[in-house]
Structures are given as structure tokens and as C-alpha cells.
Image (cartoon, rainbow, N blue to C red; front, side):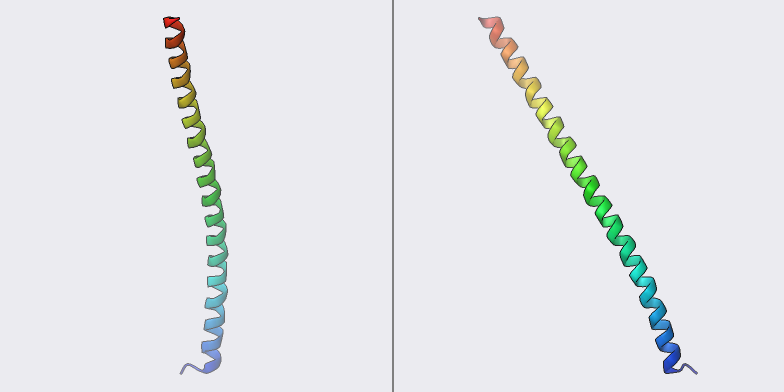
Length: 66
């Protein structure tokens, strides 16, 4: 027969396990946010490089006409 003390022990253990999982998920979430920020910065850098390349091409074409 399951006693209230047994239930409390099981719930306490489950609570500890869930707290550990929660902490691990918080760390993983933080790491994913950092990775996401890095990818956004990379995408912005790539876009700036593409814009600069287009500007250079346009200036070269303009210089040719001068």
C-alpha cells in the first residue's frame, strides 16, 4: 500500500529531477539565443558586404562613363 510518505518522497524526487531538467533547458535556451544573435550579426554583415559590392560595381560603371 502506498503511504502518504511514499507519495511525498516520489513527488520530492520528481520535483528535483524536473528542476534539473528545467535548469538544463534554461542553459540550452540561452545558448540558442546566443547562436541566434551570432547568426543575425553574420547575416547583417553578409548583407552589408553585398550592398558594398553593389555600390562598388555602380561606382565602377559610373567611372567608366566619365
